[in-house]
Structure formats: C-alpha cells, structure tokens
Image: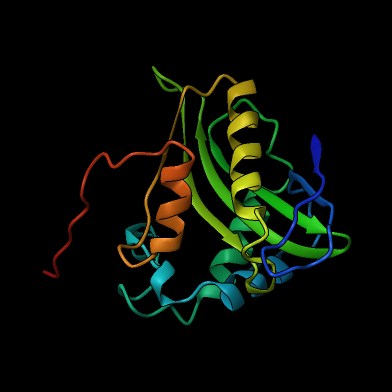
Length: 184
C-alpha cells in the first residue's frame, strides 16, 4: 500500500496539529466501520444522482435503508485495488492515529482512450472538518491518479453541498454539465 503523510494539518478551530495518513484501502478498518462512518457523516445534502442510480439513496433527500450494506460491499470490492492498472472502484482512507478521519471512493478508467477517474465520494468526518483534511486527501488522490497515468478527473455533487463546491472550485474543478432527472 502506497501511503503519504500529511503533517501539520491545522484546524481553524484551534485544534492541535495532527498527522493524517492517506492510503489505499487494505481492509482496515473493516468494511462495516467504513459503512458506519459514511452513514454517520453523509447528510441529505450529500446525496447526488450517482447515489440514486446505485440504489444508495431513494431520492434526492433520503438515503436507502440498505445504505450500510451497499457501502460495506463497495469497500469489499475496493479492497487492495489502489495500485491496480485495471478499471474499477478504489477507496482511500484518511486516518489520524487509529481513527478514521475521511474516505474517498473513486472509479478509475485507465483503459479509456483518455484515461480518467471519477471521484464518487469524498467524505470527511464531522469532527475533523475545517482542518484541511478534505483538500489534502483530494490532492493525494489526484497525485496518485496522475502517477497511474490518469489524465482527467470528474466528480458530481449535490446542488446544496456548497462547502464541497467551494473546495472543488479552489482545487481547479469547473462545472461541465447539468444533470437532470424525472420520475417515469
């Protein structure tokens, strides 16, 4: 597992300096802990169209009752795949000591004509927000993708997730399209 330490991640809330370790998911913590972390920290403003398409959300306001199982299954699928050159789901963890501080799921498509990745989820624990962990984790993910030959990264985000939008804009992401849906 390739890891990188981010030192001196200083909180704007006067928290002490802390070291955050980013790495590809290797099975620790167990998938149920990953799923519990996701469910605990993803509010309704986090839901995007992919969550609905994948059955993780019932609609734009409500998570599926099967959310825990679906996230745990996704973590199992992603285990040990970080450095693979094949297409598929990956999972990054951010840790402060033994505690999980954040996660990021991404789909890599190194086999495409122009290799790309989709940042499916970037989630920082509510007790770790405002410390630069999200931006540092996203930068780590981008660096790892570049090293793997990925040329482009996409993401999508709930319209109401303004704090995340500010982060994405700050890191160079620009709007590309508008996603719409209707019930049939």
